[in-house]
Length: 431
Ligand code: 4AD
Ligand code: MG
Image (cartoon, rainbow, N blue to C red; front, side, top):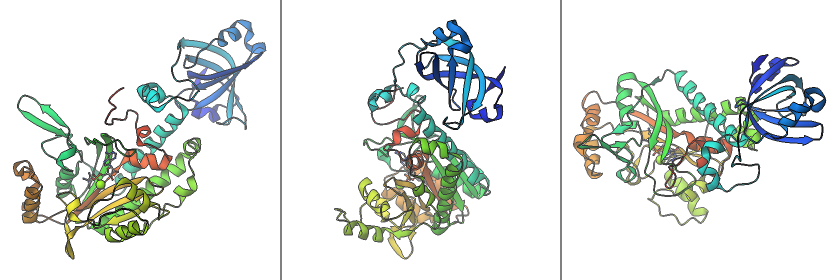
C-alpha cells in the first residue's frame, strides 16, 4: 500500500494509502470510530466502521490514547465537509508506540504549563500553523534577497565587542583568558562584507540580555540584515518596504489555511502595499502629544508609544531621523541637522511595534572614532571596523528585520513567545 502524506491526499483520491502519524483525537458512536490523525503535514479524519474492520481491530481502536503513534491504512474519499477536503475509510490500523497520559489535552491549559511542555505543545494545530508561517516568512526573505543580487555572507556569533549597546551583552568564557560576547547584530561585519561584495545580507540568531519582560522581546531571536554599499537612507527605506510587502504577499498567497486556523483578519494584511507612510521623529512626537502620551521630546519611544503611532496608519509606517543621542554609535548624522541620525524604524500596524531598525552608517573616520570614545567602547576592538573608513570609505546603509516580530504580526499573536519553537526569555531557558 502506498505511503502518503496528509497534505498530498488529493493526489490519492479513491486509492488505498497508509498514513504514518499520531492520534490527535478520537470519538466514537457505537459502531464507528472517528480518529483524527496528524502526520506533521496536516490532519485527517479516519472513519473506522466495525462492519468493515471486524470486532477485534475495532475494539483495539477503542482504547487508543491521544498521541499514540499509529499507521492507518484505508481508502481516500473526497468529502467537502472535511477541513482538508478528504477523509480516510480505514481498513487497517497498527500501533507503533503507545502514549500514556499525554499532558496536553483538548482542555485549556495555562501559558506557563504549556511553555514548560513546549516540546509537546508544538504538536498542537495552532502551534503548527504558526511554525509553518514562520517557515514561509524565512523562505520569502531568502528569496527576496537572492532574487535581487544580494550575497548571503555569514557573520560571527562569538564577537569581541558590542554592536547595540553594552547593557544587553551576553558574555561567554572564551577559552582561558578571554571573554567573548554573543552577537547582538551582524551589522558591523555586514558593513565589511558590503565593502567586499556590494550587496550582502546575513541571517541568523542574535542575542540580547533583555532584562524586561515584554510581549515583544526575546533574548535569542533571528534577524535578517541587508547592507548595501553606496545606498542612502532613502534607498534602504525603499528596500525595507519592498521586503515587507514581498513577505506579506507570500504568506497571504501560500499560508491562507494557517492564517484561517489562527483566525487572522487577513483584510488588514491585504492593505500592506507600497509606499508606506514616512514620518520624521518630530512628526511622530507631535502625534504622541496629540494623543496625550506623556512623552519627552528627545527621548526614545516606548512600547506603548509605538503602539499609538502604528495605530494611526493602516500599513507599516517608517519613522526616520531620531535624535542621534538615543541611537547607536554607528549612525550617520543628518547633514541638515546634526543632532538627528539618518536612521529609520519601521513600525508594524495593529500595535505590533518595531519590525525594522536601520539607517545610513557613519562613513567618516574622525567622527566615528569620536563616537566610539563617546560611547566608551574599546577602540582596539574596533580597529578593523575603523579600517573600513581608512580604505575607500563609501556611503552605505542597511537594516535589521526581526523574524519573530514579523511572525507575531502576521499571525496576529498576543505574545512573541509562540513565534519560535523554543523561545528564550528572561525566565525561560527550558526546555
Ligand atoms: O533595531 P535593532 O536593535 O537594530 C540592529 O540591531 C541593527 N544593528 C540592525 C542593522 O541595521 N543591521 O534590531 C533590529 C530588529 C528590530 O526592529 C526588531 O524587529 C528585532 O530586530 N529585535 C528583536 N526581536 C525580538 N526580540 C528582541 N529582543 C529584539 N530586539 C530587536
Ligand atoms: Mg531598534
